[in-house]
Image 1 (cartoon, helix red, strand yellow):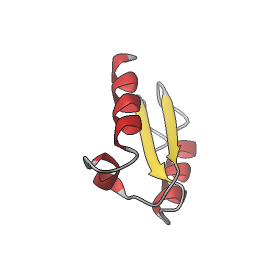
Image 2 (image 1 turned 60 degrees about the vertical axis):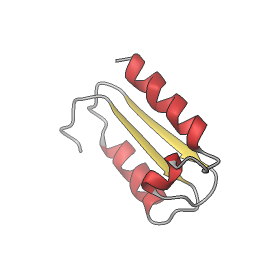
Image 3 (image 1 turned 90 degrees about the vertical axis):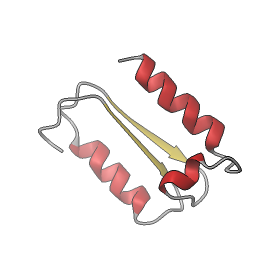
Image 4 (image 1 turned 45 degrees about the horizontal axis):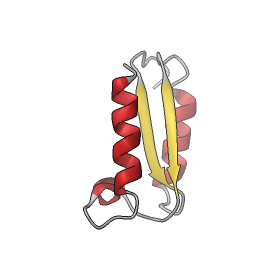
Length: 72
């Protein structure tokens, strides 16, 4: 991660261990990235579950991903 220079967005749910801790570690390690963002959400959903149609996080995650991509 330390050599990563591309923009990167990490997304994790606070109660999804160890994914939450790994996202935080990866974010800190990506210090050379052109830009980096860490989105921490409430709950315990994991990975694609954050974007399922019935997930309470779906709209927020979609908006953050689109905003991240539009900023590139």
